[in-house]
Length: 244
Image 1 (tube, rainbow, N blue to C red):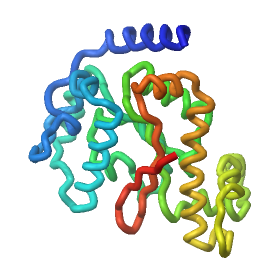
Image 2 (image 1 turned 45 degrees about the vertical axis):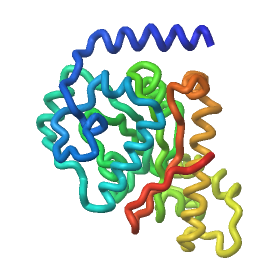
Image 3 (image 1 turned 120 degrees about the vertical axis):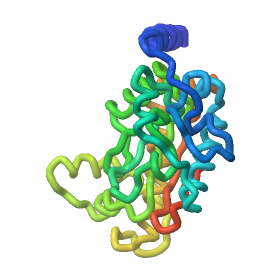
């Protein structure tokens, strides 16, 4: 623990020391009645939040997305206000599916989140390293894995699709296929089974992050971050946060 804590402290000082503070009132700092998020999230706003605060604001953002009441944004102003430094509240791991852009679904702006996308929202060493950077160095409070319904990568894993490098990627999903309890047609043509496997896969990826990364695991034990899974419903637009 001492080695990990020293690593975190040294790297956060180095990184944050080279960054200027962003301006006022980003998405997460805006009030519930705010109609216009002017600037990117500031360090003060981000650091004042707990991991549960970030989850609550992500849920509120998804509610706005579903109702068609997304924050009106000036992306150029967010870009300018974040140019001197970034203070994201979360790191999002989601699928490359064109219908599931996590930051839009959660109504977040420039500078509010780190975003990693890969087919099937699977983790590997590089993804975990990126999450360690996001949380241990920069100070993000939430590591969120987001799967989605009707996932083509999950269907491909179920049906043993083989295609170049995709074969190895789908292999990372296959353990979730075997682990998913399901009565009925266990094929990629059954949407209910695909969605059940996608849910299992999200929970497996969350568990893998905790098991593989000592840094993230210890940050979570200390209450500084949360590692959470979620599922996005393509039809309803709703994001469900999953209990591990």
